[in-house]
Each structure stands twice: as C-alpha cells, then as structure tokens.
Image (cartoon, rainbow, N blue to C red):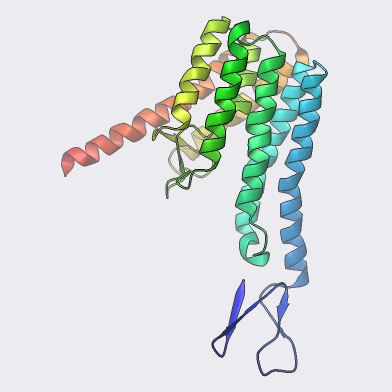
Length: 263
C-alpha cells in the first residue's frame, strides 16, 4: 500500500510518516493485520513442504502416501486464495507477490511431483514415460507464465496444469496404459489452448454442484489411497466427477455460441 502526501509517495508497512509531520500517523492496517497477512503467506508457502514430503514418498515407492500428500497440497492451495482475498493481503504486504508465490508452489506440487509419480509408477507404457514427462514439464512451465491465465469471470484459459489431479486419478483407476497416455497427451495439448476450464470456487455458475463434485472426488481419492483396494463406488466417482467439468466447458461454449447468434 502507498500513501500520498503533498504530492510525494512514501511506502507503508504497518505505519507511515506524513511529510512535514512529527508524529507518526497510523494507516488502516495495524500490526495485527500485517501479522495475519504474513500468516496467510506462510500458509501458502507451507505447500512446498507438503509437496516435498509427497515427493519423498514417491522416491520411497509409496504411491498411496504420495497421493494423500498431493491431496493435502491441493486443499492448502484451495483455501489460501479466498483467505488472502478476504484479508486484502496484497495491500497489507505490497512487497510480497502472493500470486508469484502461489505459482511457484503450484508448479512444484501440481507438475513436478506428479511427473515424478508418473516416472516412478506404472501409469504409462514404459518407453513413453520420459518423453511425456518432459512434455508435461515444458507445457506446464509455459502455462504458469501466461499473462491471461484467467478470464474476468474466473475461468482458466487452457488446462491449468493440474496434473496432481490427473495422474493420481489414472493410477487409482489403472486403465490400459495406452489409454492413460492418450488422456495425458490430450491435456498437454489443452494446456496451451484457448479452451476455458472452470475454477470450482471462482466460477459462480453452478458453484454448489462444482464444489459437491470436487468434495466427492477428493473423498474418493482419499478413501482409495487409505484402504488400498478397489471400491467400486469410489472408482465410479473418480470417473463421473471430472465429467462435470466437461459438461461445464460444453455449456460455456454453447452459451457463447447462442449469444453470438443473437447479435
């Protein structure tokens, strides 16, 4: 946050001094507000620790433990953003870019750890693991650098490199490895596309339905990782829940086409 006095601009971090004034003038943010903002940034940064523990589980060959840590990182990523916006963290600590911090954590937990998972466990045909892993790392890095990641109404431009959802799901469903390869190739292509994917929280349309499907997917993922055996209902949910995203994308484009036809 910046303060403007007599045409001069001075930075503010909890308190500021007026030009030509002797006594300090407090801003709208107290020390307690600043500490709360730092706590939110700490919550976001803790995602890299959770992700590293998940990576260590991959290295040790514990696939289901790694999935649980990836789910934990996903939950952290889901709650820190709304809290940061509610507390106006960006203006309370203007010297730290929460969006950049979030992208750093996301690239690690959403791409690097899942690619390591892909390389460690039998998800793809053997000779395709390396090339596809490199492709995922490459396109995901480019997506994280996009300046048009989100539309004004909360949709992602392109698949938002959420491989922490795709790869563990394929592992738990264990389809034919060539089917898994085809799925990953399609999402690689969609990463750099203009196809819009809904954010389950930011998108207002059908938000309750989206959050319900997301909760069901997370619950099924956790359950299958813990019980370590196939449960038909949970496997069905892992298939059906992502289909809701496909339905939303189709409805989005149909609605847009209808509006254009009316012009």
